[in-house]
Image 1 (cartoon, rainbow, N blue to C red):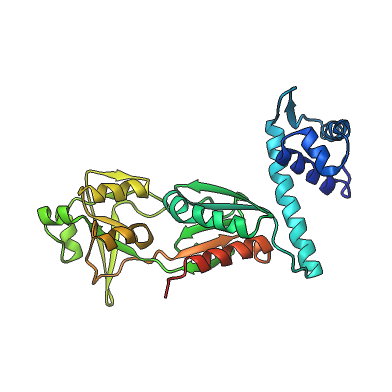
Image 2 (cartoon, rainbow, N blue to C red):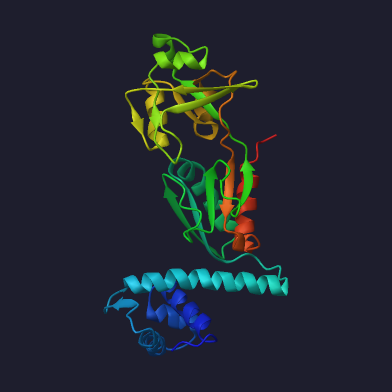
Length: 301
C-alpha cells in the first residue's frame, strides 16, 4: 500500500522514468544503479497490483494502466508544486505539466507557434497541446487552459479575455463579380453561403445587428464542413459567402484574396478567451501561459 508520504515521490520517480525513456537514463538522473531503478519500478507495480510498463531488452512502453497513472501523477505533482509555491510565496520559474486545448485551425496557426516560444522561455513547463474541432466540456478535467472563441456560458469557470475578435462576412472577388455583392443581410438568401457546423450554435443561422435592430437570416449553400480552414479554402476558391472569425481571414482580406461584405452590420462577437478551472487561477504555469498568449496576441501599435 502506498502511504501519503511515499505517493508523491513514487509519482515523481515514474514520471522521470517515462521522460528519460530507459532504466539506465533514469539511474543516471537519480545517481543510482540500473538494477535499483528496476527494483523500484517492480515494487511500485507490486503495490498497485498492475503492470505500468511493458519491458523488453530493447525498449519500454506504457501499459494502459501506466498511461492513466502517468496522466494523474503529472497533474497531481503539478498541483503539489503550485500549492507549495503559493504557501512559500516562491518566485521561481513556473514548471510542471500544462495541458492546453485549442481549436484546430486557430490552434495550428497561432497557438502552436506561441507554445514553441513559451517553451523556450519556460523550459521547466511540460506542455501538451490538444487540438479539437469543438472545445471540451468545461466540467471535465481534460485541460488546464482552453483557448476558445466567445465567452463561456458557465460562470463557475475562470475566463480571461486575451484578444478581441470579430466575425466577418466575406467572399472572393471572383465570386462577387459573378454573383453580385449583398447589400443587406436579406440578400444572402440569393447567394450560396458556406456552412460551418461547429459547437452548439444553430447551423445555417446568421445573426446581424444594425443600430438597435437585430436581424436573423437563414442561409443556404451547397458546401458545409466542420473544419474552419476548409471553409476558408472554399471561399478563396469562389464557392460562396462565408462568415468567419477575423483572426482566421485577416491575411486574406489584407491581400485582397477575400473581400469583406455587409461591413456596416455587426455580427456576434468572437473574442478570444483563455478558460481554466477555478483551482488553476493561481497556478504559476497557467498564469504565465495566459499572460504570454495575451501579450503575443496584443495588436501591434
